[in-house]
Amino acid sequence: MLSKNELSYIEDNLGRHSLKSIAKKLGRQPKSLEIALIRKRGTSNTKISTGMVTAGELAKTLQIDRNTVVGWINRHGLPFIQRVTRYKKKFTFIDIEEFWKWAYENKDRIDFSKLPANSLPPEPEWVKEERKRKKNVRNYRSWTIQEEKQLIELAANGKTFQEIASILNRSTLSIEKKYRRLKAYKRDLR
Image (cartoon, rainbow, N blue to C red; front, side, top):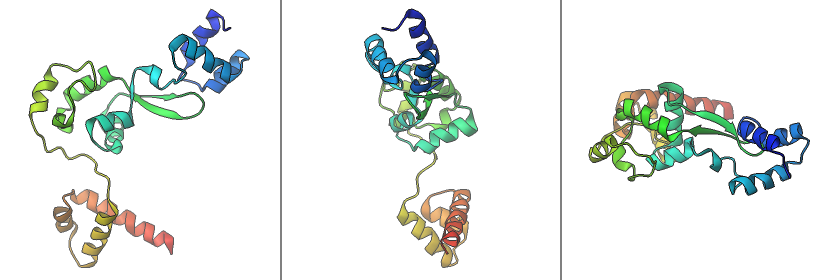
């Protein structure tokens, strides 16, 4: 049985340190901490117990690519917290209330019409109005193998990046970057 001080230490450090290092500090076995967490919280899954969503879960809910969420974090100031869950794996967590504050200031980046009602509670009132507007938001889209082949073929046939961008419905900048990456990859294979 863990003491109140030990339980308090676990609560304070869960997510900052792996379960293994917390157990070592307390002179306990990681499995005993898992059992204690199940008794106290109903789960030993530290990811679930944060009350936040991961970048991947947010992306899935918004029906966008995970890289778009990562881009919002890196380039547009979406607040996040990185936490270690259980043993080693790090997750990027987003507090839902912080997301809504950020989303209000960045409405142009999100197509709320794709967001199911109350899928990220508590949902602010302004989202209902935004959901009614269908937006043509241009966020990151993963490249398919077919698109990559088409890019190489169009470039080989003398099309400009601007023409290719129009054909593939992507930005000229993304076409240029992808083309360079594909060429570099092909060079590395030789």
